[in-house]
Length: 170
Image (cartoon, rainbow, N blue to C red; front, side, top):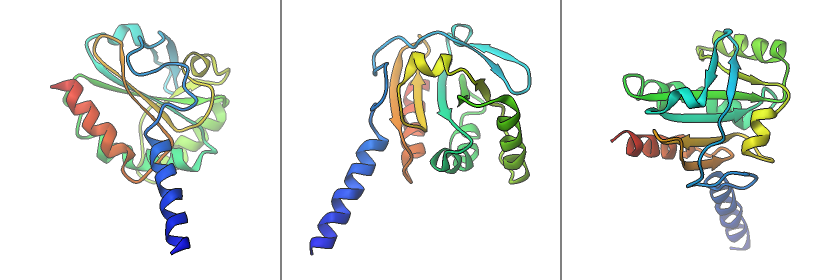
């Protein structure tokens, strides 16, 4: 019985961690910090140019196992369902050089996971949004207000993000 209680407590803390804004400078209801990010393909995306669209900003790193688990689910759970809507996904690599990010994305592409990612090697964008813990997702509404934040990864975290995206697009 003691082991079951310990397992329950551990799982409860993982779930609450995944649905929290721990380590975040910005909170739900705050205006998202504006930024411009250079994407791996050379494009530059400015958050201010995306007014009128729901935006999911995802902070990740190549060394982060939970981030890569999340990436493997993103095409089916986020990109495909919202491909025909006013939705933009901006994954931003936190604190890593372009060569490393490019290599990781090439590895993932060989596994069937292919999407463009942003580069924040100096953590300028990251420092506007958060202080610690990845993966970290900020769902921003059409007016630029943060409506949902998730930190960490759990088996249903992307399902919850997808539900929140649907709410914003209705």
